[in-house]
Image (cartoon, rainbow, N blue to C red; front, side, top):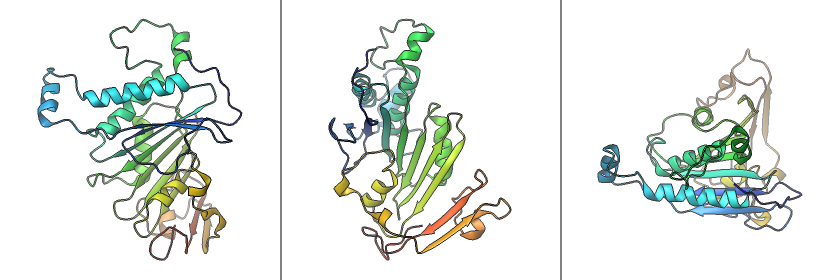
Length: 283
């Protein structure tokens, strides 16, 4: 596998989007925040007949999903240069185990981690350990939108689950849900998979684009004019807790917050944020 020899001064990002709509993303080699984006169309779930034939070995599975993975892999492998940051994005409408876009992200992540080409199943040659290591492409971040109403796990639990479902070494995992109001969980891991930091957001109303851009701005480059200027607003309430003796849930009754893994917790409440419905509040 040959990678691009171009080295960028600032971290360039290669983004693959499976089935989601991400507004305002930069998509150019130029500027101080270079980023290239590959949009794969929403992969439809196979019919029951195709799924049944696949279980019987009479079909090769979801062909559109496999083609999307091959195209996405080709995009990354042809553009990747050492130092680039690879980000994978998807939105799932079914359970993770059966959603074709989730399967595509997981399969692509595995090929990048293993240094294998999904389009060369019939011509794969045995590689030595050094060749395999050189072909591997690290994944910087993963963004997953949860649209399935059957998903009952909390967002922190989803982040922890994805850490084990996906290949090791992913630095950032972001899950978000906008079924009723916008919620997100941004977790950063070290090389051993230990949580370094975790940020949870809860927004009132049905706003979507502005909260998603602000929640993912550390792993995706957006046009400056599209980004909400929420960092210019000061919280109207802050609470810091650094002791394990008092659970974070006692400070604010949010069952989805898992606090045992971290020593320091900080709650911030904002009001009057532009682009947020209701009173513009965010926790």
